[in-house]
Image 1 (tube, rainbow, N blue to C red):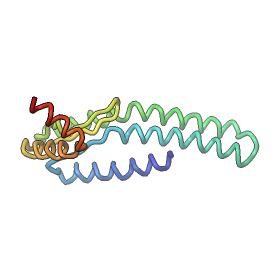
Image 2 (image 1 turned 135 degrees about the horizontal axis):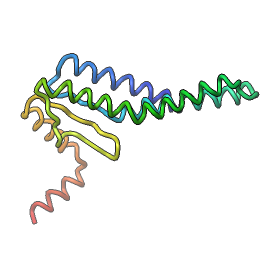
Image 3 (image 1 turned 45 degrees about the vertical axis):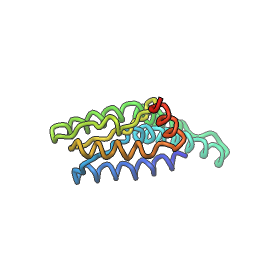
Image 4 (image 1 turned 90 degrees about the horizontal axis):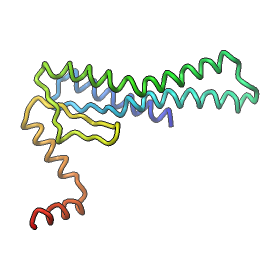
Length: 149
């Protein structure tokens, strides 16, 4: 699971960097991947400690325990600090270049955020339309029926 989180982080981080370098008309910043990075590091450290203890079948040395503990704690710190720092940095980088958050196209669930920055209102409207077209049909029928009455 930790390896999957780290691989997913790599793919999405590379895609976000590509969008920032090319100054795409819309830039998607996935804040959740930075939570996954910290979680992947922390879980990876704990998993490594467990594997050492189970496969070697003897208690790990104090040095190994100290390193596993420090890495797990660093993962938790990264999980809570890095998303805020990166979000602030990206916002400060994009706003002077004319980008604004397209709130209706962005998504948030608890701490997970997918923030869309656009430099053109028409692009934002297009993204909002695309997002609304992804709503399941049963919800569309229900909302359309509510609008009729």
